[in-house]
Image 1 (cartoon, rainbow, N blue to C red):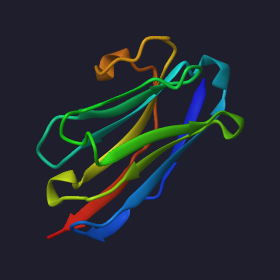
Image 2: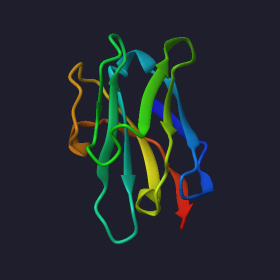
Image 3: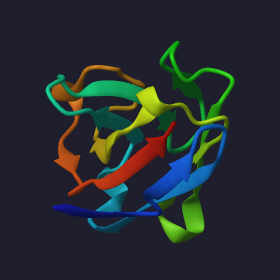
Length: 124
């Protein structure tokens, strides 16, 4: 089992920044790939960004490319999501997820463990 705890969400104005953190504990050797997803009210959960744990390869959704940066601290078993130039459409509950796969995937069904989520609200 892997436990994930997200933090760093909050209320920010358009154009502002936030940094989300996701700390993993438990059987972290099973964490081959870590990703962020988000779910806005009345919408399906969508992929945001992913990073492979060993090589650090990253991929982003087109909607956040150039504004968000995913990174990881192997020693702390923590992944981060730096979000800049935030827009109202970024408002959502942000989830951290872990996959045992070495391949960076964008489909939520490829992920084995999930955090509880942290709320990000961007005011216009």
